[in-house]
Amino acid sequence: MAKQPESDSFMDMFGRFGRDLKVPNVDVEAILAHHRKNLEALEKSARAGAAGATSLLSRQRELLQDTLREIADMAQSYRAPGNPQELMTKQTEFARKSFEAALKNAGEVAELARKSGTESIEILRARIKEAMEEIRAGYGQK
Image (cartoon, rainbow, N blue to C red; front, side, top):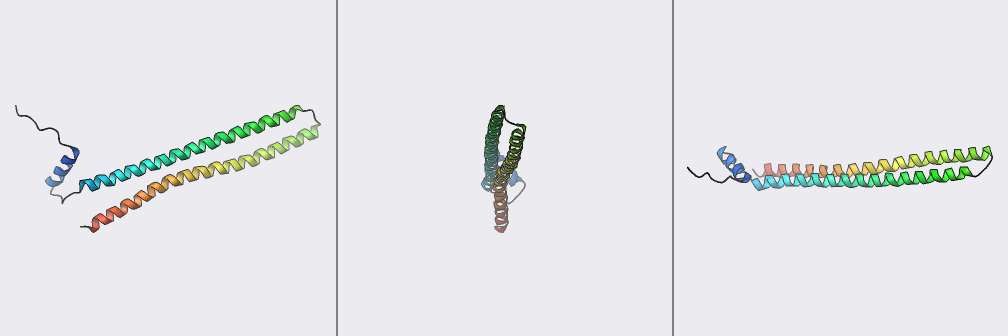
């Protein structure tokens, strides 16, 4: 029984495929380098997105803790006996402060999310631009 050759590497099979089709010399290393850069850009983009999500969640947790602290403070102030007018004034003031804080916090959270998304997209946009330049340069060599 004849001994079969050991399996070829992907690179060997890819090169043989190109020769069999009579395709002009293919720079396998250049192709692999191109795709390696694509994967690195995707990884950087994912890391940027994850970092943004982490900071967003952290900030939301801080905002929730602040809100709960304010509610606890308000509850303490209700224990003190007072006239109904004074109680109504405190409730109105708390409602106003809560509304203003909610608007400010929502704006801050939206800005954090926008920054995170923009950073992640910019990484991919830069890689796409670089890849297009590589392709143009490749066609210019022929």
